[in-house]
Length: 147
Image (cartoon, rainbow, N blue to C red; front, side):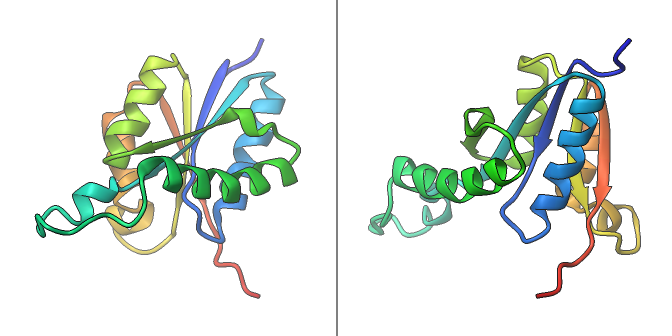
């Protein structure tokens, strides 16, 4: 019997994202589980809200399209379907936990950085997800990639 049925992997677009996504894909495959891929980014309007006359140079749709293209390349390079990708705007912790709840995921996979102290060890997003999720959370320790 599978331990997990539905796995949500939250990735940023850092060089280490491949490590997190690969680990999540292996866990999903071993459990014959469905996998969902989520990338959360800041809302472009919120970034510039302090300047009321500032016009945001890109729409959410354009930003989503640019992010999706980059993430799709990574996802497909690992043999996964780009239709598994969701890109949302807002506070990462809230959106990751909400997506896991809405989709009835039983595992969230996030990356951690291996620095000292709980927040530094996990990163503030991973730490927040760990403390607010209603399902298991697995932090994958990412290794700095050297080019």
